Amino acid sequence: MKNNSLNPVPKNIIIAAWAIALGAITPMLDSTMVNIAVKDLTASFHTTLDWVQWGITGYLLALAMAVPISGWLMNQFNSKYVFISAVVGFGITSFITGLSWNISVFIAFRLIQGFSAGIITTLMSTMLIKIAGEAYIGRVIAIVSTPMILGPIFGPVIGGFIVHASSWRWIFFINVLITLIAVPIMVRTLPHFCPFNKMKSLDIVGMLHLCLISITMIYGLTQATKYASFVNNTTLTSMIIGILLIVSYIIYNRRNQYNTVLPTNLFKHRNFGASSSGLFLSNIAILGPMIILPLFFQDFFHFTSISAALMLMPQGVGMLITRPLIGKLTDQYGPKVIVLVSAFFVLISTIPFISVSSHSSIIWIELALFLRGCFVGGVMLPLTSGAYLGLKNEQLTEAGVGINIIENLGSSFGGALIATIVATFINTLPTTAHNILVGYHAGFLVSMLAIICLFLPASFLNKKISTMQ
Image (cartoon, rainbow, N blue to C red; front, side, top):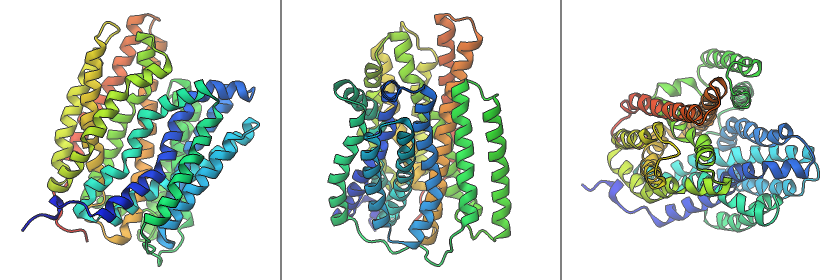
């Protein structure tokens, strides 16, 4: 009998997937474009860099806070309308953010923007899992996660051109245009979703725990980057509070027989537990170096910020080229073998960066980035889709909450860890070109070690599950 995973994805599923992807483009682009405008924002509002950074950090914290709340919204309401409402809310707050007349207004509406983005990103994957079913899960996730690639690839470049040609305000106004295009398409093409588990009550204590865990941990990690050290009062205090909250949440789960917004016994499910661990490590290994790569090109090859962003595009092109194939192979063979093979090639393509220097050929660096990009999707995509394999329908929202929290913490931890290690080497050694280069090598080495560690959880993934429960 022919395996369903080899059949073409039905047209209605493809249309729904692209509609969801279109709705998710704005928060993915926005979060990367705004970094380019930091200097312009500081000058426009006549304020300090610390205040402008709160517009960026606050966005991330609000996004993290929205994740557990999104799980309850999916359980109680039609996810189609929740998703569309969040996209509309993001567009409206983008418009007001673009009109900001002082830094306080800017920060306030960036917080609302971040909250809307948190709902969008959490609902995105869960809705697709429900639409696709196990037979098409890999290929459909490959479609809907495309904005996650486009954001880091094109966001800094687009943002740089917008700031150069016009004003930082158009970074936010462009979101309004995309929203006006996306919403009518989503209204027409997205299917309706019955509430996933309407019988599940609002877990205020659990949601508060998860919100505070995300906020304290991510804030502490951003401060580590700011101080170029994990040994500072803010980071240490935040980490201690975060760990205590995690312990408290575990105890709370047991006392409530795991009837919570994110049951911790979900991590005992083999695929979910392995995928969660793998996603945390892969976010460190893959997203972490994205912090230092632009700086490397600027420091050693003296590129502008826009030119440095353009130099990263081969990695994104590689990701786009192989993504449809990876989705198909994941459906056909399951996540385990795809992750193991892809992780091996990501490891091989990262090796050149621990010996790269200002004398290295740009062509070889670009080829290494392209090869890395070709296999990065083979790590992230199967881990994401594999997390949902074998779960019951009522567990999908809980899994979506868990995966988003882990990815947020993984990317924040990876960025902070690698940036802090590079800064520590640069600050503690005599300031020479060689010592600065050693700092970058150490950062890339961390990425390699994370990939090596990834082989362990990947080996626990199931090869293939025949049917979704």
